[in-house]
Length: 257
Image (tube, helix red, strand yellow):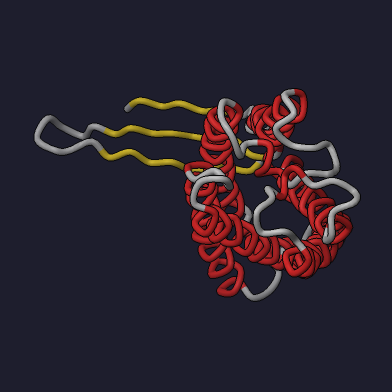
């Protein structure tokens, strides 16, 4: 039997945070420096709207999506391993964990689709994928906040996650509402990334884009709240080969400290 274990699970959050930060800031800095967009609180996707920064944006977002999916899967195993600590409604607990895994995976896949179609290419596909990312992550956070409320541990983390959910909900509504109002006043022949203070709809787009930045950073903060539970867990991978006539049977488990 081949056995492997990894007790340094929180290290993946360092990688995730670095790639996540590079994906949203680096293309934006390049785009503003080259004058392809204005510095007036652009939408995150506008930073990767044109090449060559679009290639950088897409590559980093794909890496972010992969790292995010690894965390989502490990989180699923960690929650499964903590099931013995559930004080009530174990069926609801396990159901929410499976639903959260599905929602998180859908969000990660939608991130890849969004990155594959820059906002200046096929806008409808990009915006639809971005909307799916936002909705799936929102529901994912709700599921795990509910899950944390069922665990018999400190109430601090559930309260923090609830605060993030409420703030994210407000931000998401502002993104949609002010973005829609901005589109009513905007000139159809002008790229939104090149907005100037004298443009009609400028203020609406600035508020909408600001809310998007807040929402994206709140998602990162929500994932960071997983660190404490990851610290208490060890990842084990077993590869059993009973005999030559049988196929290999891999097993992955998470044990709590």
